[in-house]
Image 1 (tube, rainbow, N blue to C red):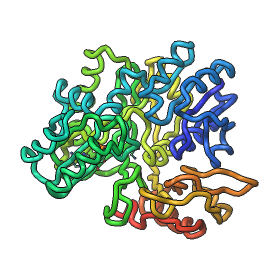
Image 2: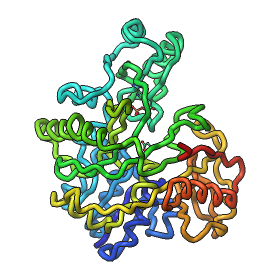
Image 3: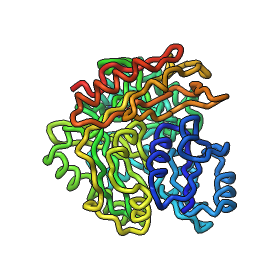
Image 4: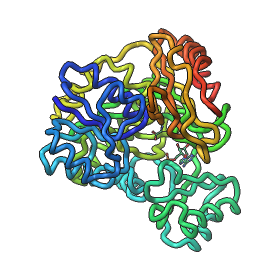
Length: 417
Ligand code: AMP
Ligand code: GLY
């Protein structure tokens, strides 16, 4: 089968790494891919927002299955266009992708189907939003409605910061059209968890759990990032929480999708805030998480192509999924200054020093004349599977010592429970 993966990050590297191991995949392409993905797939320089380019390429190459990594092309309707051309797609159509594409839509969906989430109000006018801060308690959570590359959520300690956040989004238009509407919501405390699920024609099957570390610096200090490290499984997902999630979240989402006549196929990543074995939904993402994928997919023992194929057909069942008992840890090596301002094109040294059973997924690299150069904020994800979390963690950090690039930054406390 000819398979196409769309995207260029660590998430797409792990997808290609796993698909390359499938005997069913005869040819693997990645658009546009990155320096590391080149070792698993043929990378073609068509960007993931070039919807027409991707469709044309898929028709020309007679692609049998397209797997769409990032949210933006899903929200733009890439899946719809490929399906119109009889290409099988793993990733929701526009109607399902709206669960990530509009925070207001996702909150209304949660409200309508009684899914636990933070209380909120929506606004289209900045003065009204500022006035309404008095109805909330600090810290204030202000969110742009549309996609903002993971940066559209501002958590504000006091009213002055809250007003500034509303101005930045609605008046200064820091996130362009994504900030025409906003929501202000109740701040939730607890511990965050990532629940990635396969969705097979609206049947939701949770994958193994993971814990992401979103803040840039140790001890959860600094700015929010796309994720600086991750481990799986996450012990917070005990039986009591799993039952709660099945009854109060997953079943209600299934019901909502059916009632709204949305047919969803792909990944639904439910971001939750956990407290006392209960949880509230923070957000929906309609694609694999990054760096969640780097710890969850390596623990899957099945052939990923077969799993995806059955998910699209609607025949997959939870018992089909086989997981290793090993624990996985990944630590992101990022460019100094990330998530704000950082430099690119720094030579990465030491990748040859890595032990054989350590996997280095590339998040933002390019390969020039045999050298890997940095090409993004998040650069590499160093990943280990081991009998215990502690062993995996130690091995990751030992191997990181051998890797080096100018201004490399990483957290030292990933998976330190
Ligand atoms: P979202 O994109 O909605 O998940 O928000 C990004 C991040 O902001 C989340 O991963 C949380 O760390 C934080 N966050 C979002 N909403 C809330 C909330 N209501 N209370 C506390 N933290 C939040
Ligand atoms: N790690 C969080 C995300 O992928 O959105």
